[in-house]
Amino acid sequence: MARLAIAAGNWKMNKTVEEASEFAEAFLSLSPNTSDIEIILCPPYVSLYPLSQKLAQTGIKLAAQNCHWETKGAFTGEISVPMLKAVQCQYVICGHSERRHIFGETSEDIGKKVKTVIYFGLNPILCVGETLEEREAGQTEAVVFDHLSKGIVNLSKEEALSLVVAYEPVWAIGTGKAATPQDAHQVISYLRQQLAKQFDKETAEKIRILYGGSVTPENIYNFMKDPDIDGSLVGGASLDPAKFNKIILESLRASQ
Ligand code: PGA
Image: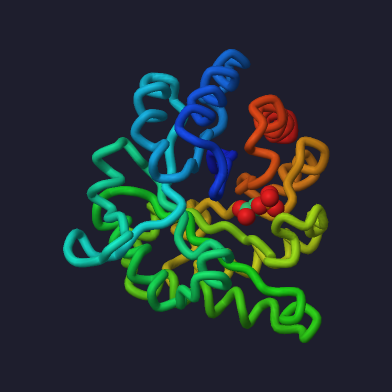
């Protein structure tokens, strides 16, 4: 069953509103193909609204990098899912490793976020991945199982259809040392088996699972050649419009 590929650019804490808008203009001038692949930009919160204006009718979608699980209230510094929905956000990254490791988010918090994102009709991109230490100790499957199972703990089969999972080994993020396509394949097929156990095979076959961690225009082709890898979550290389467009072109070339 063919799943629509995704190329998602996670800008992290980069680009002012003005720089985000310059990116959008340069990127749109490259006429990215939005019919055969879902293109998602994940800018900082303050650029979501201006980008939603610039990208209206282009087919390019927006994701937030985080959210809170409550709808509103006394949570200083937080942003709710209805606020994101109101600025045309369709995706929310949940449980990025930087949120887990720098800001101490727990898998339980992340499960609540995933549930709320789906409740409001948006799509979570649930990130899972092991550290180098965990990999070397042979704990990769145990760690990604923990991240996945707690992230999807309260979902029904119908809700699971809104889910996107991203396998992002922590040691590959921002290091220039991507996983091999074989490593990514192994973990991603394990994740799909777990999704089949939790929901059913048919549902698991519909859920897109991305790879992330030092994705570049040069290495994306080999990841996307693997039928189990449905797309990429790109950090550094998504900050440059030409590089990100090349990742999209290479992803499409691999699916031909
Ligand atoms: P990177 O980041 O592509 O810069 O390694 C990926 C991510 O953190 O999503």
